[in-house]
Length: 313
Length: 167
Image 1 (tube, rainbow over the protein chains, first blue to last red):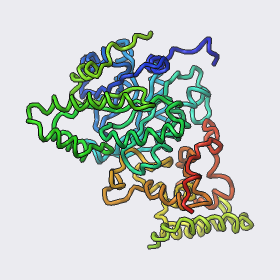
Image 2 (image 1 turned 180 degrees about the vertical axis):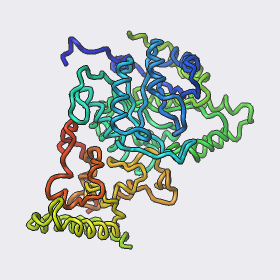
Image 3 (image 1 turned 180 degrees about the horizontal axis):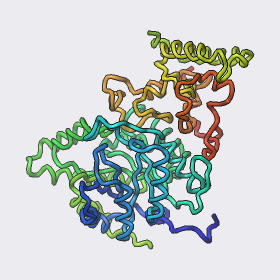
Image 4 (image 1 turned 90 degrees about the vertical axis):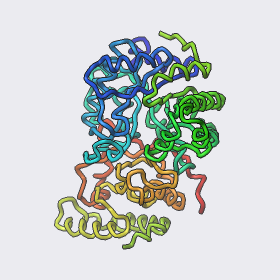
């Protein structure tokens, strides 16, 4: 591929490359066959975000598929980030879906291992994990750069993906987490969306190691943030959702707040975290995960001083 | 039964090294579909089963994963821990089991011979090799044969852990 005939490029990528502090948000898939449900949820995010993540069966629960959601979003001119997990599909299905997504106009792909089936509503399901996230990333890159499937068979018109991966700096083995990031970048990751960041001391330590390895220069790192709805929701998140770490002082702060004001306090904590994260060298943006509180995203972005969003076509 | 041996990863990597070098003259006995294959498979299954809880994937990478079998990870990951590890280092899926990769990482730091390979990018598994002998496959290069679209990843420099060796 030469530069002149370069396929359409991701708007998210352009925004990051232009040096803007990017904002993406998670769109939780509805349990509905009505496209309007997707559009309603996306509408409140699109105005204030540079990319909308279409979650692939969030928490291993059955929902509308992420590839279908992406197809709906591109039709309406939104910029989706197609989340692909390795839990439910083998390599044949994944590569086919990625090509299909590209044909639908999807330009951003987030490659994930995925929560285990036991985390979801159908724990009896068979887990697949034919790929891990790193093998998935590399395969997607091969499809894009070499125009072949994993088997070596030719793809006549390759996808033009901006490839992403996830990172969780908050769980062991802590020392190795930056190296895992290095591995993901070597496999093809161009942007990173992290797990919820609540423990900012740990994040700063992690980012220091990341900078020492020069990784912040090789990929755009978006810090995951999100409002906690209540003290109870915080307890649920940290005890039941794999990989989420919330320090006691945050949960205590919510507990000390009267119940009816906890959601407001959760939002306030989120804005404070965004402002602090923004100051960390090497963080290129934020990724807001406001599960069942999507209506708060606009306020959070606004109160964090991140409006208006850059207008890059 | 012999799982405690895994806590001596340096000893095990020496055994692995001797095994690889020492047995290569006997390569002709280690033949795919040869008459000795069932016996070799049985020995491998029992031996590696006792020490590593080996799952007979037929493409052993123990020396690259801290002498800890990655197929004991419920997600069968080959390239390191997922993001679901519990803060105490235990598995997201099996709360009573230490994360395979937390152990693998710690052990790889105590492996001066092969520990650096922990950083290498492992290709997708070849599911056709399940149940076959990784020893036979190793001697005949069967386990290192990659899908055509997977350009070799062995040469990718993702090696950042060399300096951290304790011994």
